[in-house]
Each structure stands twice: as C-alpha cells, then as structure tokens.
Length: 194
Image: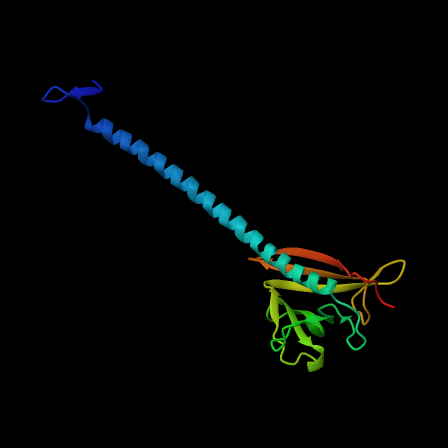
C-alpha cells in the first residue's frame, strides 16, 4: 500500500485513514497539554491560597508591632494585659480631630468572630466610648499574649499591669482545615516595669 495516492488530476494526496490518524494524535497531544496546564494552574492557586492567610496575618501582626513600639508611659493609662487582650497608651486618631491625641489602643482575640481585633479611643472620651473594632487578622483559631517583665533576667508572664519589656503574640490560624502557627515577639523601645 502506498502512503501517498494520486488523484484523478494526477496530484498527490494522503488517504482518509492517514488524515484521521494524524488528527487523533494531535487530539491526544492537545488533551495532555491541557490537562498539564490545568493541573499547574490548580497547584499555583492552592499554593497562593495557602500562603495568603499567613501573609494577611503577618500584615496584622505588623500593625500590632507598630502600635506597641510607639506606646509610651502615661500616668493615667496603664499597660495592662492578659492572655487574650492587652491595652496600652498610644497616640490615636479621632474622626473629629486632624492631629493624633493621647489615648488607648486595645488588641484582643475575639473567639466568636475568630479574629484579632484592634480598638482605639482618645483619653478624654473615656473607656472604649464609640470605638469600633478593626479586624487585623481573620481565621484565627486561637491567640495568646504573654509579657516579659523583670530586670536582669526576663520572665514571661500571662498577666501584666505594668509596662513590660516585651510582648509576645502567638496566633493559630485555621487555613482551610490546616492550622498554621505564627508568633511575634515585640521588644518595647523604652525599658520595662519600674
């Protein structure tokens, strides 16, 4: 059997079977390429989603770190904290004023909302009056705060009523059924408890 046949007018051509075989091979190759491309895209999206929770949590922890690093001692606003919440004096913005004012910043873990929340309120307006919580980190399965106090040797404690030397924030994030743990230790600029 010849691979090429002559037509009525004398030109050369392929047989129908040869053309069908070539089309079948091309279809199989296209299917393999499409499946590989689809699997690659799914793997990329999965990796992106996996690290997105961590990335958002890191941004929230950076806000907490900035707030704590910019805190200061103020006679009437203590630095107080327990394992699920801490509050401290800092400069805060208010809707009615263009300049920062002395106030309180609070960082707390809300079990029901599964979020790390931040609140701020000015000193003159009293405790949490009208302050709305800002969600810093979502999908939080658990959070714990601890505080380093002491002089020559640091001791980590679950409670504080004085300005600590450092604050440790530990988060457990629920990333679609897989828990991811993050921790950040924030060393305060100006000493500790006196």
